[in-house]
Length: 68
Image (cartoon, rainbow, N blue to C red; front, side, top):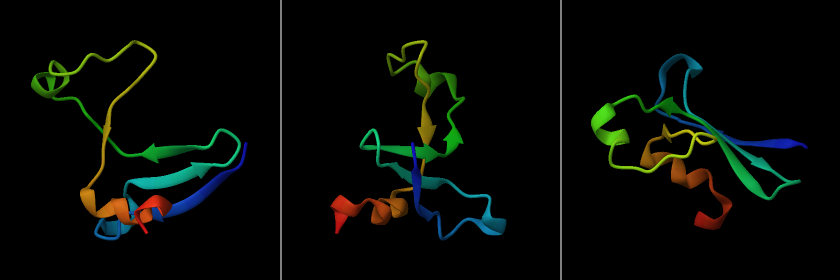
């Protein structure tokens, strides 16, 4: 598996930002983002044990190739 770096949140200070990668072997995106811990928000979703929820700013949509 080779992850290809696509971009970091340009508005995040000190490089501690959400980051987007593309996995060319699985044809999927991998996101490093802010962990969602808010119980009220999590209660609105049905999240299986093998999944997690992250959050990223809308401005990062520019890094998805399909958005071009």
